[in-house]
Image 1: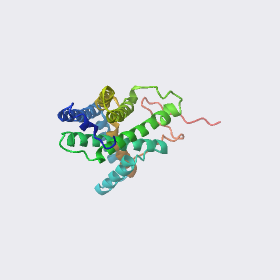
Image 2: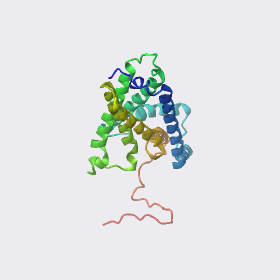
Image 3: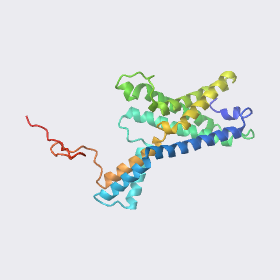
Image 4: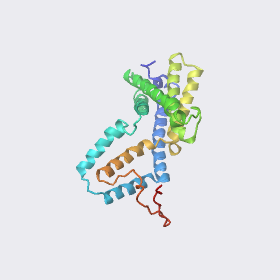
Length: 264
């Protein structure tokens, strides 16, 4: 099973061009959904405005060389290592899910575009990495879902409680779970169960990639930009994540001054 390309196994029933077209549509859905999310939520406008403010109000000017170093540090620490997570368990779960998803998607594309024509043998490494990626997503995702989520671990809510914000995680877990179950059923002889699991896998993939405007999928593109902007503002002295001190009156929007705390 681990060395078998499941997409090549069904290529006699589903033409490779159909599978390849489906992948292209999924990519277009992600691109279009992300653009819609940027326009609807004005994320790009916010980041450009924030970066402009950071550059104009900073205590010192940051050169191109330092900007490049900050970009590399952001990529290494915040993106590749998920350094924004202070909780070790959540960080490990996130890394398992992130790298598992990359392995799963990359090897799906390789196997469908490169080895479903019937005339070439799929190198065993690609199905192995595909199954490993799906398993990593399941381990990291279910660990997060049942044991690490704030509303479950700290607030005592049921792990089976679903809200709109859970669309990304739920569809991602469904996609990789049904993919693994489909591969197992296919290796066991196929039949009705394997096709049912395959259809559930496709439906979960449609939800995952087609639901970008309504899920947190696009956050994976925004988070690096936010982390970079934060590091730039820290470098030029404009970053301040603390409220005004209590002994300093603050002026609010309607001419109302915040009063000093009473002394007893």
